[in-house]
Length: 133
Image (cartoon, rainbow, N blue to C red):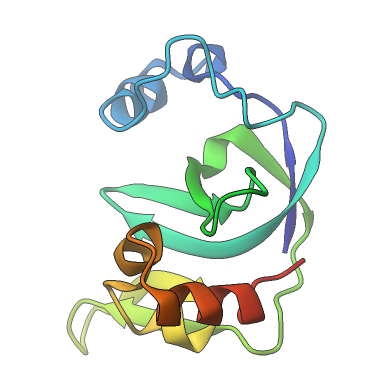
């Protein structure tokens, strides 16, 4: 899945309710310097969390992990998904909905991203092997 960055600053979102909702989680008044407007990025994971859809994108090459960005910053360029991705669902059997879409090791492990940020070697190695270029 590939997305093109349209904005990199919360202030550029015109819909006031969306801006207010995202402001709870984004605290960069000058925008995100890691996102280049017009640049196309490969999505590493898609997650529904805190009433928002987040795209995990590897924007800092020297890091061993991607960063979550709100889907509102992007436009989809290529919606095809890698063949190894899986979905994890939440909710009950009468009302399930998508929680995360990515490779299985992350899709089914709620601690995967946290362990990746913490630099846990097994998680870092798994991500490095499975991440989309």
